[in-house]
Image (cartoon, rainbow over all chains, first blue to last red; front, side):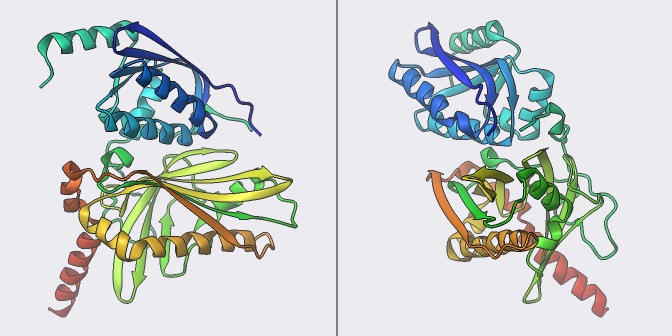
Length: 125
Length: 232
């Protein structure tokens, strides 16, 4: 059995924005904790969820499937998923799996929050 | 289990088919993009098929190695998987040419990921499924279990209808056959179990235009054109 190193903590830097600080390996075993984090963030009123991958060590193909499942749940509630902190390798994986067509990828948290602010300033259309 | 970041395929915009056997067709693969679950049309499914290799001592890593090396031998006879490399490795593109009742279907896969205990296929535009198929092996109560886990949406409205009417059961047959053949290679005559979870019942109607890539339609048109040309 592979060692389970996955953790996720939820914090709210702003109203209606939640950041998921992901640490360790993302795989099928991460599902319950990731979905619990989603439930927590939703209950707190988050409409945008920023996935922070700076602390992620590894993700396999099941981990990508997990992100799709999370995306489906978010889309059902008109919530937005954004990612940041991916290294070049995992940015390529997001492109390979075309997950980047549904989850916008930013360099870091500051860039992600700035993009949100600019988007809010222009209005959503 | 060891894990190695280098075991993902490199970035690819359009699939490239190389080194095919004579008679194999790269139709509906060459130049196509990959299509993930985000790009599909129909409800999102996760199906799981598994077989326990009871009574034999085979490590999951050994089973996966054999599966990657001899993958085509475990498939049903009417469908042929052609690939240039002797062993399925990340980045490898293989074409699938199936022939049933005179109808030929050409599509393919790309090996998206592999580690010591699993490997995964990504699927091209036009395949019946948009998503991924993960093949894995693990230990449970002292027995190695082989598993196939498709994670997909049907690609377009036509495929979605066919899946509901027919292909859902056909898919079950394919993976039952595959897992039984794989287990048989290790001397096990086992029973395949399965489960299915619909993760999203909604259809993505904005993806209905995927039908323009439908490999079944393209294959049928190609077959008709080829037949007409042969008669001239």
